[in-house]
Length: 195
Image 1 (cartoon, rainbow, N blue to C red):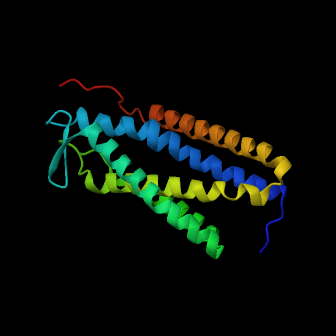
Image 2: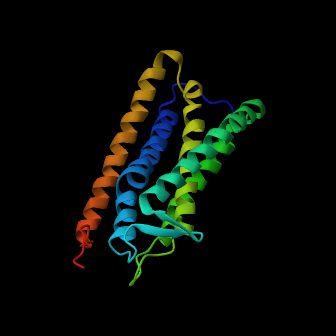
Image 3: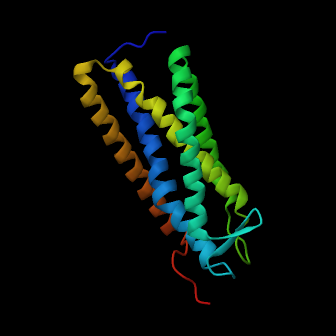
């Protein structure tokens, strides 16, 4: 099926993808999850900031950055091959769907990073989901960007791209504000408890 350029519904759908995608980046990569992770792996940890991951000991922030770095390395190695295959076979939509589902389900998998009564939760599953969510985000974003020349004429590509970025930033701020409201409503403790 051929995509009609400059179609308002198609452009709106493309922009809404950025709305959802940038929400991941704001909440999981940069603000809420990293703070939540450090909070529970430091202040509830009898070992200070040292955590265990598959039997090896790491400083908590070093471990999360290492996991994120491995995810980005996988992306760097994998995407040139996958994008070439997608261009050759003409099936980039399938890749976009795959990476989007991978990212969404992996974010849902972060549910397993739950506080426990004594000590900290097991980190293996949550950090694997953290890495997979990153791979899903980056992979989906590459294939998403590749649709711009197909949905917008050359004269309108700058305008459509800017609209996508605006939707992305607004979407990420809306989700962030909702989470701040939720955190306040549930009276989550975001400070160091007394020892």
